[in-house]
Length: 327
Length: 107
Image (cartoon, rainbow over all chains, first blue to last red; front, top):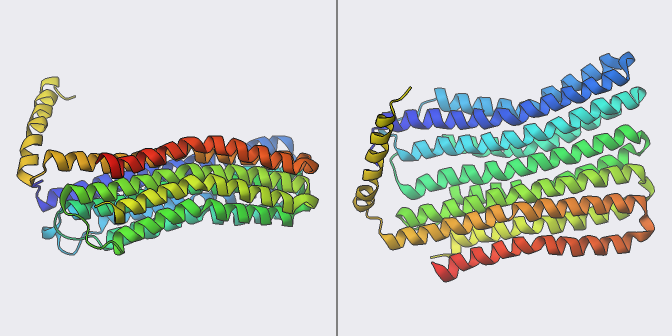
């Protein structure tokens, strides 16, 4: 395509920033709304400790809002930081900023949505046990911090894409930039939701059975770690595409290879991420109810999550086959 | 508000560019088919993995819940969970097979 450098630059800026903030804001908004909704229900039940709940809700919303702030930072960087040589800008710059937008947009969507569940359940937990509110608030912050890590991976990949944007226009390089963003962002979407779901289940359990606090937190952290696997696969493929891809076939074929690999590992990570989170949430509740059987439940959770992850591994295999085996 | 005839003219202009662009950049029909098969393999495995992942996670979650309620039945529950997950996995394996077919047999 023969477009002027200025056209490529502006197209990239507007589309990239639009994707970053358009998708990146959705999750945090839903998550914060969910936290506020559960805080309202909790205050209705225990109006005497409403200041405690308000504090927990605001801390939870502040932490849960940070993925959307990452998206805002990347969006503003895309809009207002121009490349060093504006006259050499081509399709590669366009693809790099659109890729950065896809990465942080979907990554922040998942983490923002996920961080809402622990915040809501923590308010509920404060209503159930006002004298143990510090337990709920502490575990909420730990759970939210882990649920945010996929969006931090997405932020890193997005910033690398913006800072290493190349001059000129060629189809495989465009595919690599957009593919790396897609692989990272969409796989982080599933992991963020899953980790959030796990933390939400754990907070709900800690609210109901506060004495099993320690063992529930352990199950939650192990479960969340497994939920992060698809995001790590996505980041692995994104880094392979950006830095470790040897000679890619020129033209349309190279573009098709990287795009196919990105779609496989990106969308393939959504299901296992959410599924592992659902498992971990139920396992946390079961552990809190029966702390004496924690190892049995932990074992079942890990077996179930491992089976759920198998499809993410198939997707990784297809992606690596596309990148390295197919001629 | 855009005039409908303007949109039609714009679409016709864009449609007229496609074959010329293909000739200008030297993209042949065979390359296009091959590229379609490669992207199709990615879509097949990517979207095909969503369902089994969520479904198996759901089954495992309920198994954990049930084991929490009656730990003495852990063996039976784990077995049932694994059978259910294996059935749920089948669509993921179909996706894998179709993706591999597109990568190595069709293209």
